[in-house]
Length: 387
Image 1 (cartoon, one colour):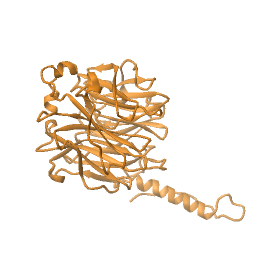
Image 2 (cartoon, rainbow, N blue to C red):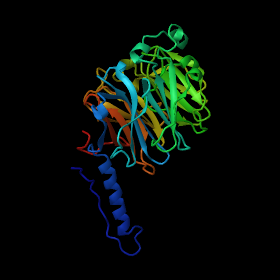
Image 3 (spheres, one colour):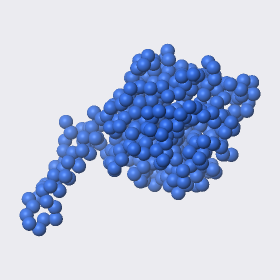
């Protein structure tokens, strides 16, 4: 049971600034906030076995302009290994995550794809960027490549050497045909986006962070025409892995990346002050120490949020942290899931008009399953709840 806070209500008489209806409205607002903090607000989105798919991994979620949630995952067949990824699965929600549509496969039906990377735009359009694996070549084959796309594709131009994008203008009900953007990606051709969600800056620019396999190199690729054309910037980041970005305003972009020293040094960090074209040197944020794993960033409601395993010995204690100064310091945190899992997650802003909550799509402790949860932005659990 949720314990409501103790309040003292005055009896209003003529001249009171607030009438009883105002107090009642305050009570309902308090009750609503506490209910949304309950751990019962965890919803299963993808279950192993749905649609004869053995395993769902690599979550990504965005909220569209109308408020719909679009949740994506790799659909893996046979087992949960990286090499088992074939399609990209999607479910949508129009009630803030309480219920979800039937599963649909939006990419990869013709040939294997992976690493879903959606970007929600102010226009209402959503772009879904991903890596393509031609024929029967899958991610395990791609990860054996060398440092650059040119050397990776020199021996076999189809060896995980592609990237595609599809678009929806109706909140995921229908999708365009695939646009092959492999040549636009240049040195990042065949790299694995994210995982997680991409961002659109205030000026309309789209940003993708991608990696060429485990701890080889990360790239930043941009589009200034809603995903029709792309280009990869000159700066790249050697020796790191899966990245995530947040738009913190006025062209300032925060990037954090998985790395081999994450358990002691924290996530690798770089910043851009010109919309992603040039970047600072890499540093490490010891406040973001945790298990070596993917993480997620999102900026909304005046704060930046980061998620990832908080346990530095295993992928356990999935934790959300909040920063109120563009990610320079982190002032609050909340554990969403204590038990160990595969550890990947994707953060998203709360419902339209909701100034109190955010959402997170994450890999559940049940193997091959993905859940969605709502969390309070202050990251302060009610006593006895989320303990």
